[in-house]
Every structure is written in C-alpha cells, then in structure tokens.
Length: 172
Image 1 (cartoon, helix red, strand yellow):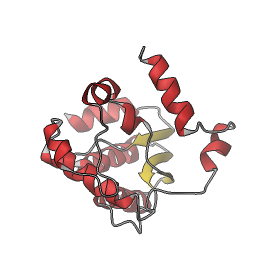
Image 2 (cartoon, one colour):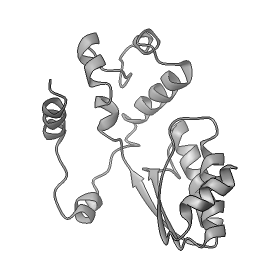
Image 3 (cartoon, helix red, strand yellow):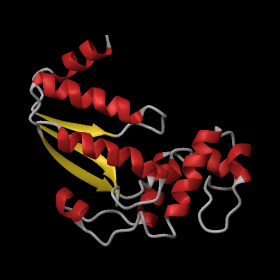
Image 4 (cartoon, helix red, strand yellow):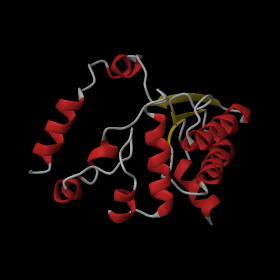
C-alpha cells in the first residue's frame, strides 16, 4: 500500500526534494522507501536535506543522514545533498509554550537537561535534543558557507530578524 501510494505521488516527477523525516526510529527505512519508489517511477534527481558534516559528526542525528546519503550514492539516479545547519524554526515552533514557560527547550553548554522531560518531551525527543545541543559547541552545526544566500539570491536573515518576524507573525 505504501509503495503504491509513493509511486502514485511520484508519477511524472523529474526532480524530487526529499526533506528528511522527523526524529523517528525508522527514518532511514522511510527514506529508502522514497528512494526506491523514485527509482521505479523514473525520477531523475533527488535533492536531499541532510545535515552539516553528516560524514564526520558525532551527533546521533548525523548517522541517519549519512545512511540516507549512502543510499542515494548507491542509487542509479542523480542526487544533490543539501547539508543544512540548524533550523532556527526549531527554537520557535513552540514559541507560545516557550513564552509561557519562560525558557527555551535545550541543553547547549552547561544548561540543565531535566527541564526537557518536565516540559513534556518524550525521552527519545529529549535525547535527540541533548545530543544535538552537545554537537553545537563542538562546531558540528557551524558553517561559514554562504551557499544558501547564493541559492536564494538574497541574504539570509539574522537570528534577530528571524525572531522578530516570528514574534510579529504569531501575534505576540
């Protein structure tokens, strides 16, 4: 059923943007199903949103991305890897909750972790955030690249601009 649905969705697609699925234990299997369906339906290229330094990072999240990159390398179609840094939306997707709690959910640096479970996250999600936050001081999510600005043909927003826009768009 899933294969038929994927193939139907990909019918007539030449270039597919594969945005990695959320933090789930079967992410690579899901990505493989999409890649296999793309092969069967004649997709010419998959553009995949990976993570910075997927081939070097110690971050647990990178292992799934690297596995997907390897699946793409073995597939008989063209692929383009977009190795993204951290999305600022990760800090604002729960903006009303952050304002209500008076804190962001994270554990970068020496910050306490117990706030994560108390904030209602599952242990798997809390572990993923802790692991990712520990990668930040190691520089695994840092880049001096301006590739995104060149691709967009406009400057990217600063953190301040992004947060200001989000606050105003959420009516806060």
